[in-house]
Length: 295
Image 1 (cartoon, rainbow, N blue to C red):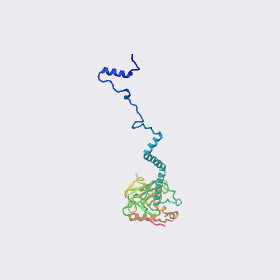
Image 2: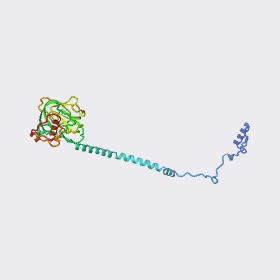
Image 3: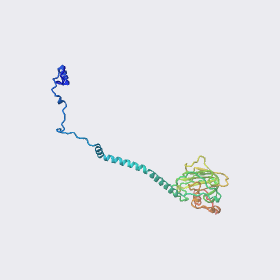
């Protein structure tokens, strides 16, 4: 029987194990030496008490305040951008509207024939192309060709443009872009075709062919045409004949009417307009027949 009061069981077991192995001496370490107790009063580094939780949080914020401030500024900037975006868009739309209004005001446009002059209210003539500048309506032939070279015509009066009767083909005066093709509800006794000149002294100005004409096959709005290219065919023996002159890029209106040169009185009294005289002089300088001044 073991005397538990005399021998510590774990030590006796350890000594027996070492004795059986015969490799190690008996342990000379006293049990109290295996895990010495710390004496806080004599320790070189006494145990430090942990600071409160709120103090730790505050210290963490103090160390990282630049990053927190930068992040907050970024969020605030994003909110401001989102809030101001509609006003920026509105400003752009306002600028675009102002630009469009300025371009429209700078155009030299034409007016429709008056209803009391025997013509219906004009209809839509197709999309237009913005003019490059205000037309001077000179009669300088440089760079242009006679649009009546492929037709046999008899000149009639000068009014908004120049009237002719006859047959054949009407061609483009110069390189141009087709801006309007209307064959019904034009306000004229027939079709209305218009193009914008791309070169020459009258670059940017519009030319129209109206009344007893048929658009050339395949002609379309937006097409770029060359000088001398067929634009329309004259309808032979048409009671209204044809009229050609300066256009306005405004439906089926003319430059003369838009500039206030045409009226019911001018229609009745056959009074020629300045725009009509200008176009008649241009035709004459290109080798075609000049219109007649009847009023």
